[in-house]
Length: 398
Image (cartoon, rainbow, N blue to C red; front, side, top):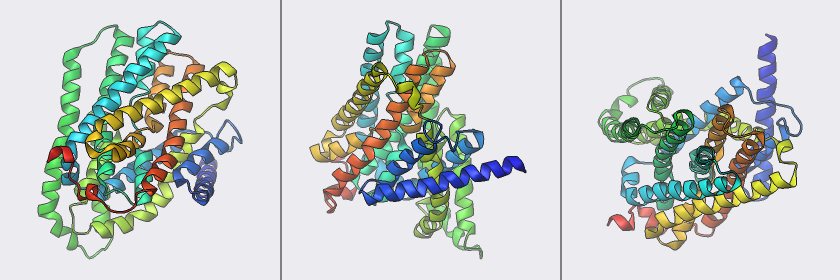
């Protein structure tokens, strides 16, 4: 009973802090997620120490981001993503290759140890789909072509990031790569996304009518939430993040005629659970490890490198959309968020690098997550009028 009381107090503190931080951020015309991340830094161990990330809170955070990506998928049609497949693939590939190469070069310049350098470089690679998707959803621009490119690229980005993580982990633990195993992992991951996306959406189109039959108005929501949780778990069995399965589940549910009703019914769940993900993301930063001038210098270089390389990869990959929309895509791919934190945690646990490098990588992931959302919101806010891009056709696919 005492343990339950402690958890309830932490849940209360996180929820109230998230609401306050989000409101303050919106008051100064910043996306609410920025305020929630900053709130996590304030109430976390580095400052006030009101909460400490622990397993129950991490579980709530995981559920929150799974539901967030499900809601984003609910507003995204699989056919729309197919129309921008060319740009999304180019953004994903270049958005992984450029940061990885530049990150490895920078890490190797600090200490000539290639296995260590490659592990550090892996933290520069993946994009946090949760943070960018939240900003796009708050702005109501999920139907724009650049938004679909960002979301499609984020799915591919996750596959490539997990493959790269497998490569650098194999080098670190075994000193060699098993190319056959990596090919199998990549094929399984891509196959999972394609099969679930293609087959699932077609099945939903044909069978959606039965969702109208139940007398309980909440039963359709219960059924698609079961689909969300099931595919989230299944994605982890293929070496992917759970949010990829949740996103695919949302796209499948988006084919149902009850789509608008489901979106409305999801809102209370999102209000309750998604703040845990963003607050805990901020609470994980350890400011004490960044107190020295040398550490701050490393952080500044790492953050600028992370922002510039993702911007370059996204912009080059999406240039067929036009320079302005390509810039939107590049900025949207900047946040590292929880993905960079996870990779940094794995490196620390494996003894690849020390607490200072870990703190730099975590802080870099958080800073990119704080910097990118307001910039993306400002860029998209300058161009609210509908244009040809909203038709969903990738110019490069015509």
